[in-house]
Structures are given as C-alpha cells and as structure tokens.
Length: 138
Image (cartoon, rainbow, N blue to C red; front, side, top):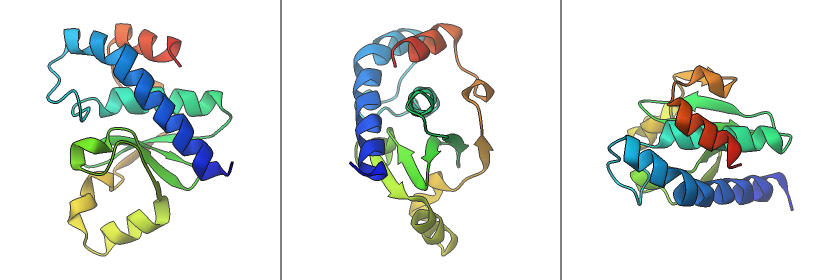
C-alpha cells in the first residue's frame, strides 16, 4: 500500500468513526446544518483526523482555509468533510496541483486556499467534551 492509499484508508476510517461516534454527541451540543455532508463539522473532524495521522506516524498540519478546516498530510490535501462542497466523501488530492488551480483563478476551490497552518490541534478551539471524544475514539 502506497502513502496515498494509506492516507485515504485512514481518512475513510476516521470519517466513519466521526459519523458513528462523534456526530450524535456533537448534534446535541450544536446546530449542525447538514449531518450527511458534515457541514459545520470541519474543525472537529480535521482535529480528529490530525490526531489519527499523528498516531500513525505522519506529520500532518491542520490548515485553515477560507472559512474551512482540512488537513495537509505529506504532500496531500485530505478533507473528510469535503462532501459539503460536492467534492466527495473523502478527498485526498495532490497539494501542489490544488494550489496551482486556486492560484490560477479557480475560485470554486477557494475553500482549500490556505490562510493559516496549525502545527498542533490544540490551536483549534473546540468544546472540551467533544475534544475528549475526538481523542479517545481514534
């Protein structure tokens, strides 16, 4: 299994765990716009994915885009909430390719334009109860 396949498998597993175990608790605490697309859950899901990648030996970064959070792992953009933008359930895309598209004027992908990189998940603010769920369930 190459790195891209491994990253996709991990991301898929985390998305499933997020939907099954975190969404029920999160839905009780916050108004979630669309449970199927995970709209409004990107910071939580990216934090969970970041922690799983760390546990698997990767050196990911949480990326804050234009109002959206996702993960950069190796040379891949990894987004487990991309379904809210019609980009599939789990996106694992070549980082350089996506950034070139955005820089050349493809504003349809502007939610993936980096504004800030976060080296540690603690930089994201989220409810302590959800944070405990995120860390304990991966």
